[in-house]
Image (tube, rainbow, N blue to C red; front, side):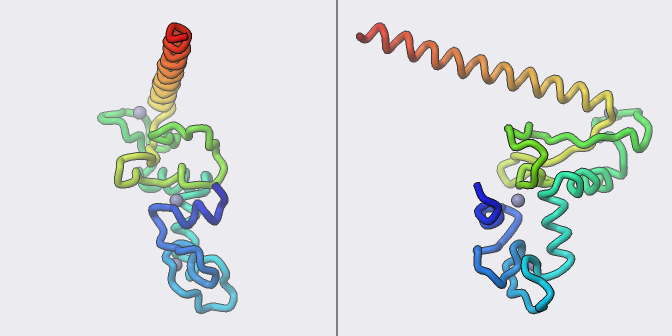
Length: 151
Ligand SMILES: [Zn+2]
Ligand SMILES: [Zn+2]
Ligand SMILES: [Zn+2]
């Protein structure tokens, strides 16, 4: 997906793809100094939901620099930011996979965890991914076998 396509399809934005309109809220841009966003507010709103370093600090600020796991006793500022749904190969490049909050289907979003909880959550996400890959492989194998049997 190109940057333009992603901005048009972003569930947080209202942009229709027309030039001269804010690529977040779709308002007509009145200032001659601006090309992409109608205001600093829209620029910041977009940045902190799509650019990792902004999203990461916004998530920490929102969590008041504390681990969000229930009853965690970790020190304030012992915090790292985790993608609730693994980035799915999208890496840390800009994009909708850095949205601060889950979308209306509950997909995505960032959470703040202490180092210990982050390591635990990341490990279980990796296990879940490996499990999903194994299941997918088994399905493919079974399909291959049944095809052979039919021949
Ligand atoms: Zn705007
Ligand atoms: Zn987005
Ligand atoms: Zn914790």
